[in-house]
Image 1: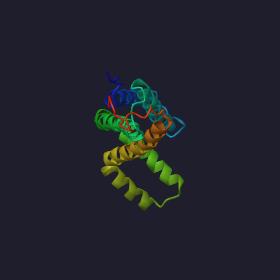
Image 2 (image 1 turned 90 degrees about the horizontal axis):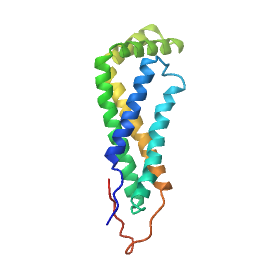
Image 3 (image 1 turned 180 degrees about the vertical axis):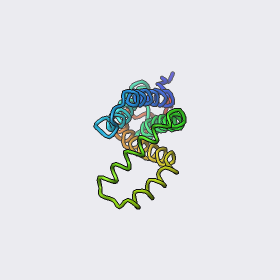
Length: 174
């Protein structure tokens, strides 16, 4: 009888919920997201995937190929990212002041770079109109790139099982 490990869906939901709770804590504690805390969510995201892939491999007695292990880790990233996108949409509807705060910070950053006022105004107008698109697009791209790298690391450090029937490996619990 094959052992079944924790599914990638379950791990993705757990990771997504951890990051949502962390994001809410950061927001309500008014922690500056431009400080060191901006790396915390990425480290947790990558670290969870790097931990989950070998843990899943152990649960299924290392009965999976590198590709299966990689896919398992990337599925975790995709599920967590999907939850974070939904959260970000709802968060922006419930807390519209988040957008205003982010736009003011962007304006300040552009002023610090001595950009001309007309360029700042144009950039702010575009950013204001497409704010949610930029936030969600950035979230998807960054998380999936980090997820890709973390899944590769997780798959490469996962112990490989014995060669079964000439290399016929199966994946369970994905």
